[in-house]
Image (cartoon, rainbow, N blue to C red; front, top):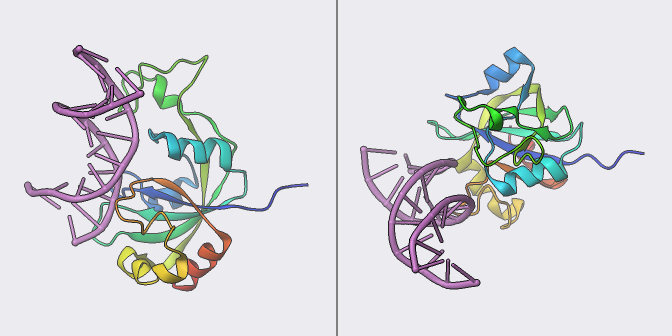
Length: 156
DNA sequence: GCCAACGTTGGC
DNA sequence: GCCAACGTTGGC
């Protein structure tokens, strides 16, 4: 018996890794997350098959641009052990890795970007606790309820 | 490029 | 364990 499918939103800067990049490679290890709360969502919350809203940040029109699927259980982020990587963490060890990731698989590109400013206009329907529209929230991986998932995609 | 809002680090 | 300094995120 499998647990109910969960939903998430994952941010990425399109200059670094975009929805087009994911479409090309199909599956990508979501490396480089160096925030404990975001790590915990990946390590403790995600299951294979969960839905992901793919979000572009730090760009002209930030917003949701596609959907993806969690394609693996959490496992240690190899880049934390690589001294040449931007994501190297000298305090992490293989015995006790600090950072985990999941593989993310391409699902589809939306027919249009659902912009952040439009999402904000629906904050009431989404709930004031929705982390994406809470002021000052910088979490790059955050949970989305089934109702929020459905509502956000209905804006497409 | 600016800067508010955080999160992390390290001295004490 | 406090908290100032510093670094990062991400909208604008």
